[in-house]
Image 1 (cartoon, rainbow over the protein chains, first blue to last red):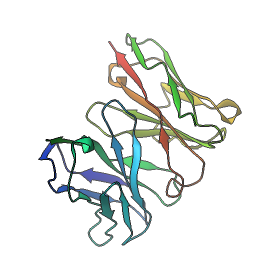
Image 2: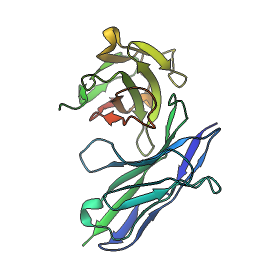
Image 3: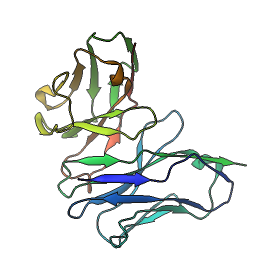
Length: 112
Length: 116
């Protein structure tokens, strides 16, 4: 079946540090992959996505590349800010969009 | 543009009671999703509607959970009777339709349910 496994947190970084949050997936066929973010007190929102192998999604300085050979979609940012403190969820959907699976979430805290 | 609205925001009930949650999606969004998010876990999709038809409800515990989307707009999710393990945040999301690969899901603020 389909599933997503992401790096457990919490993660604490200093401002301007490099961020990596690991995400691997198991899926039949060719899923689409997503990163969602939940800022404190706010609802889930889409951060970036990739719909096919080797695609790179990017937004707000965050990037993730769809790696079919390693079944991974790791989230990276070169220099985090305090405002990036949030919970990050990796997710996938099947090609038809009829099923959607989230990882358990990784809490990130960035300290000044 | 108004976002996805949900009510109530919080609900506390005793086990074996019934509860209902309401969701009003973004205007014009054909697809509506209900998720259950237990503390410390990611959201789990319970049911997906396309207009007023069910696309997928494979993870909905049908012995106690039901959902409807009359007229293809608002939706209600009901639990009857509630169990302790139903304590969670219930999220509603909507999208224009079709695959989420191409149409972003927009999430509401959620309803936090506590079952005592």
